[in-house]
Image (cartoon, rainbow, N blue to C red; front, side, top):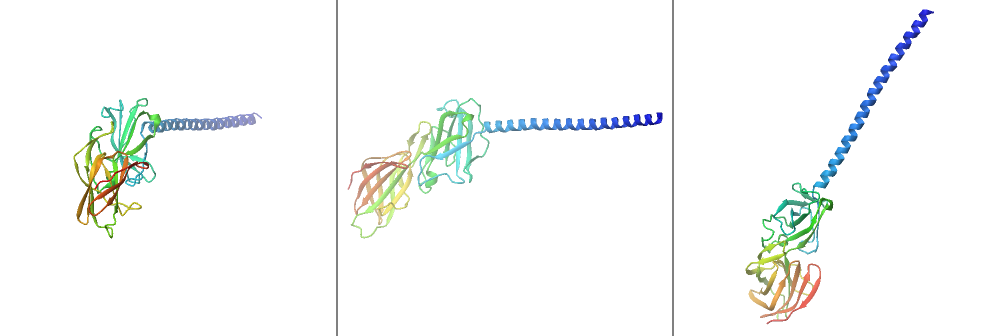
Length: 314
């Protein structure tokens, strides 16, 4: 009897020992899982906080062309712009440069990718932006040199976007609306009955300046000396025999020369013809054997505008 009681007591102790071991292992495992779960939550919190912080500190851009033209209808894959940003005041661009001419490329995903990180300098600091396309470095925002290249119309169509409202990181992405910094001149030719057929036109040249310096903040132009600028031929306008078109420096001009069958014919208007930034002027000319008559001069926005009636000159 005493032996049976002793064996029962021994088994009871062994069972309790095994139960304690199981509980100890289970508790340790539970602690590990709790620690792992807690660590995962902490890491998730910090990772998410870091992503939000990074997203807030980088400058993103959303750009479009305000007025559409044949010279540069819209941004296409591979197009580039140069972006500048500064703090301080809108009219003092060189004071505190934050983004110094970072080149951005337009991708097939319709997004702009910067060649290097563009970072806001502070969450409550107003930032001012200016961008240029085609991309080029600008050493002075008040005296940037420009030279027209008639053989490269797209490259000569300088687009400029300004956002001088004073943006903060909460305004991301930065909206940029590009406009045409240059003007455009269209010339349409029709020939009088003196000509049995459309004659050979060797060239159409305009006496005008092909260079200037630009103050991008004041939006003014210091125009260079006038020279002969040959306009490239373009798609013929309806109702005319030949058409010519070129980007032009904003200015005023009066004189042009058309070489017909080897003979130069010069037309001089009786008043200045304005070439305005962001607008195009159209000259409709009627060419005789010895003279050029002006039909109408239209001065339009890049998309639409009014018509100004012209006179005639023999």
